Image 1 (cartoon, rainbow, N blue to C red):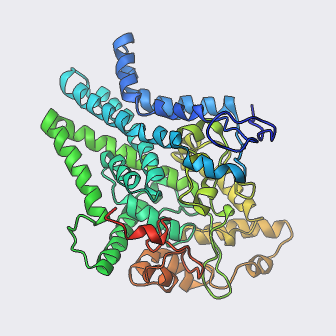
Image 2: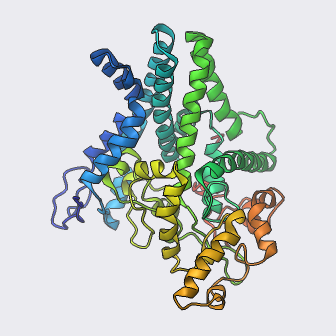
Image 3: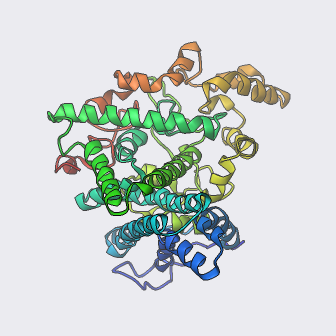
Length: 475
């Protein structure tokens, strides 16, 4: 395994107006990520070249077999830009164009797939393979939308919604920026998975919960601004209209025959997004402070990975702790955090593991408990599995010389699950948010910030956008 070492302070700069002490050695490597949106085109070319119809499934093979193998071969990258380089890295527009380029390639792949579905004599399994390949592009395209949606530039925020259109998941723009980033690593967050919760239990909870949360958040903003539901500034409505327009254009151009495959690729894309959500905060919990509020988000509240190859394909999404600390920071400037818990592999590999709950639990549950020094009560535990997991791990702690009293003493007052009432909070957290949970007071007033934190950032919508940019328009 090869590990990319920290950069030499004597290295001469080769790009941009940066300081003379540092070079971004991944600058050109970011272009590798553009291999993903051309997967449908590659699948078509491979089928034509080899006459092997199995290549219609090239997308999932590339994402979940090729990338993990290359990840292992290439190894880790812990190179961080120094403080003095952040400013010019953020201003270098080359990195933005790498993300922008994903969108036309993504839409070219969708159009090509529609052409193939309607003009070639394919078996159902071949059409499904192409739909899954396009779905992989759509799912990773949501990551491009994620990168763009956190920015203050109006163009980038509209591009974010365009990138979400193929997945029919435009409400992600609202829920992620103004919901997840506020409530991350708490039972109230539908996008934070819990210890003992399988992926298959998490998926319906997060899909339904995220939609409900986005609807509530945008409805609250709409009422504050005096907007009608179908006002073009409604962030959910205008994002959904983009999906409708895209679907209508494709149906007009290729006919109803493509509809089931468009829906299939959207399901694959959404599932890929939510599986990544599942592994990013699995079992991690922000503790409550003495006044009952949640502590501020810290590096230890996100799972990270320094695997280089997956990072190049996912725009440093794996440096997730720094992203939550600095939501508007561009991907090229994100830093590896020593204090953050580390996944045993890159995201592509972990997605495959998550599909098999026994394998996931065998690998991740001990790692999570070790992260909390054996005190499982500090984790975000699935309510239905709470009694079982406490019995299992508390007994194990007693066997190593720590009694239940010692374990319980470490639980802050008001910690979810500390008593029957708190278990109920974990089960109905979204209902409480929808009805004005006191922990959401700050955000309810439109002042932004994290759940229960008195020191929220000055971004009224909670999306990482500074206050001065929030009221500039309808995005």
